[in-house]
Amino acid sequence: MQAPDELFRLAEGYLADLALTPELGAQQDSMRYALEGGKRIRAVICLATAEAAGTEPEAALPAAAALELVHAFSLVHDDLPALDDDDERRGRPSAHVAFGEGVALLAGDGLLAEAFRLALSYPTAGPARELAEATLGMIGGQYLDITGADVDLAELHRLKTGRLFAAAVGLGLQVAGVPEAEQAPWRAFGEELGLLFQVVDDILDGDGYAARLGVDEARGLAGESAERSWGALAAIPADTTVLRAIVDGLAVRTT
Amino acid sequence: MQAPDELFRLAEGYLADLALTPELGAQQDSMRYALEGGKRIRAVICLATAEAAGTEPEAALPAAAALELVHAFSLVHDDLPALDDDDERRGRPSAHVAFGEGVALLAGDGLLAEAFRLALSYPTAGPARELAEATLGMIGGQYLDITGADVDLAELHRLKTGRLFAAAVGLGLQVAGVPEAEQAPWRAFGEELGLLFQVVDDILDGDGYAARLGVDEARGLAGESAERSWGALAAIPADTTVLRAIVDGLAVRTT
Image (cartoon, rainbow over all chains, first blue to last red; front, side, top):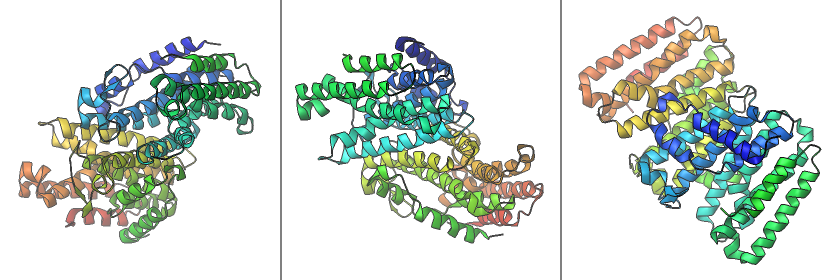
C-alpha cells in the first residue's frame, strides 16, 4: 500500500504530464496554471480508495485527475469578479488576474470538459456518470452560497464541498469494480469527508463554521466528524490504513 | 420519416419536460431561461441522422438535448461581459442581464454538466465521449475568437461552430449504432454543416464571412457548401431525404 505522500506524488506526476486537447491551443496555458499548486486531496482519496478496494492506484489516475480538474474548474469560476472576486489563489494571482476574465472563464469551461474526457477514458460510463452528478450537486451548492443568506451551512457544504469528496471515494470504487451491493460502508465514509475537510478549512480561515459557531465549537464538530470517519472506516471489510492516515491528516492539518 | 418541423417539435417537447438535477434548486430557473427559444438545429440534425441511420428518433432525444444544452451553455458564457458582452439573446435579455452575472456563470456550468448527464444516460460511453471532444474543440474555437485578431476564419468556425454540428451527426450515428467502418460518408456530411450554417449566419448578420469577403462572395461560399453537403448526402447508402431538407432549409433561411 502506498502512503498518502506517495499517492500525492503519483497524482502530481500524472497531472504534470497530462496531455490536454490539442485544439485548445494556447488556452491550455491558463488551464495548466489553474491546475498547479493544489493539495490533491481529492485525487489522493480516490487513489487510496481504489487501492484499499483491491486495484492498482495507477488504474485510478484518470479518475483522480478528473476530480482535480473539476475542483480547479470550480475555483477558477469562483474566483471571477462575478462570484467571489478573489485576486489570489494558492499564493499566486488567480487565473483571471493572470490571463484576463475571458480566458479564465474559458479555462474553467475547458477544465470541466477535460475532466469528463478523462472520466470517459474508462470502458464503462460509471465514473463519468458519478462525476456528472457530483458536479451538478456542487454547482447547486455554489448557487446556495451566492444567493442564500440564511442557508443551512451543513446543506450548503454537503453540496459545495461534500459532493466532490464523496465522488472521490465513489470513483475509486468504480475503478476498482466494487459491486454496488458492497459499496454502502465505503460511501458512508465518503459522505463524512467533505464535512471534516470544510470545518477544518473554516477553522484555518476563520470563516464559515468557525465564524458561525466559534472556533471551540467548530473544533468539537471537526473532532466528531473525524470520529465518525474512523467509525465508517472500521465498518469497511478491507485494509483501510492509508484512508485512516488521510483522515488523520485532514483533522490536524494546518494549511 | 419525420419532417424537420416534426423533429423540431419532438426536441422542443423533450426539452420543455426535461427534469434537471434537483440539487440545483432555483439555479434551474436561469438554466431553463437560457434553453428557451432556440431553433434546435443541432437537435434536429441529430434526430434526423438517427432516423436516417435506421433507429427511432425518440431514442436520440437525450443526445439531441445534450447538444442543445452545450449550445446554450456556450451562448450564456459568450454573452457575459468578460467575453462578448451581449445584453440580448434570442430577442430577450441575455441570462446575465435577467439573473445577474454570477448566476449566469453558474447556469452555463450547470448546462454543460447536465449535457454530460444526458449523454451519459446511454448504456455506452460513446455519445458522451463524442460530446466531450466536440465541446473541447468548440472552446478552442472560442479562445481563437477572443484572442486571435488575424486568425483563419475557416479554422475558427470549424472549431467554434463546426465541431458541435459535426457532433450532431456523430451522436445520431452513435445512438443508431452505425458501425465505425460505415460512418465515414455520414461524418463527411457532418463536417460540412457548420460551415454552411456559419456563412449564412454571417450573411444574415452582416459580419464574419460577409464582412471579410463581401456579401456576394459569401453567398457563393454558402452555395458551394450546400453543394458539397448534397454531394456528401448522395454518398450515404440510406434515405437522406430529411437531411437534404435540413440542408436546404439552412441554405435559404432568413432568420
